[in-house]
Image (cartoon, rainbow over the protein chains, first blue to last red):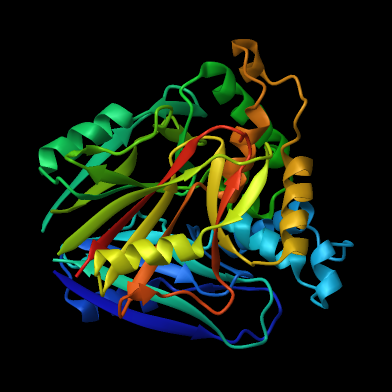
Length: 137
Length: 137
Length: 137
């Protein structure tokens, strides 16, 4: 069995930003030489998400509008009594999910035709990390 | 270490349909001969979900009503400018989650008494796939 | 390759209660002697969640208020025709997610600075279980 662990770093220009990371994950999987296994891709900060969906700007816009509706910013969240102002970012990341497992088959990410891996930042403009751990034969 | 990868195919009669797949997953796990490990069950299309919850028709109805309320169809989603009409399906699948990992213990799915694995289709009536990857000793 | 499986039991005093379980999971990982791998932490009951987020009481309160808004109790859910009264608990656990995979690196949980693992009970006051399965080298 082989494992490889690596980290992707992000410091987004905008507070909220969605970044496609499929190629970065694929490159780590290739480096691991794992032929059959799984790759965990997981946000290490609790106001960011990792999800799989479409690489289409209109849909990304729809996601952002929808998340703002279901988990609005600017509300009197109790978390803000600590001095933070990002409670909505914690909620938004929960809706999107903070990690995915991608199967690795024949040495490659075993993704469907439209599946793309995204990092979704909800409280950016500072350095944050995603862990990628590959495990298999 | 052993791995086995297989795919489940779906072509639902209805656009939205929830299908129990616990037995299909259990059968793949048995075929893998893995005694201790994990089985990843993951939708390969981005308008479908895989989730674990109750096998009770009333609750499935409640899920569907609730998803329509939180992620309604028929809205002027920007994604629809591409010619698609299924943005709500992308949102609904995000709420339900697109994958689960089932632990395998003593050669069997290690599920609680009421846990059942479901495939949730939100844009069906065409052929779509779920990947099942089993990994372990 | 090594695996270790253990179970955490809960019987919460309140019907809804959030319990930090990072230390319990870390202890099982240590006992497994896995140095590089993954730990699955998964609720075995379908009205409970396992999630990763902040250990801050204000935010936990915000989560609970928010979940009640998105998945209210006391509605005429069809599931209740079976005699149950907990359909909202099934929906709430779906929003929070029922499992996480924690990477294990150099023998320890590879968590970001603020990541904590929580068990979220939405229909408690009875004995319920979480499975923890560690797998790796």
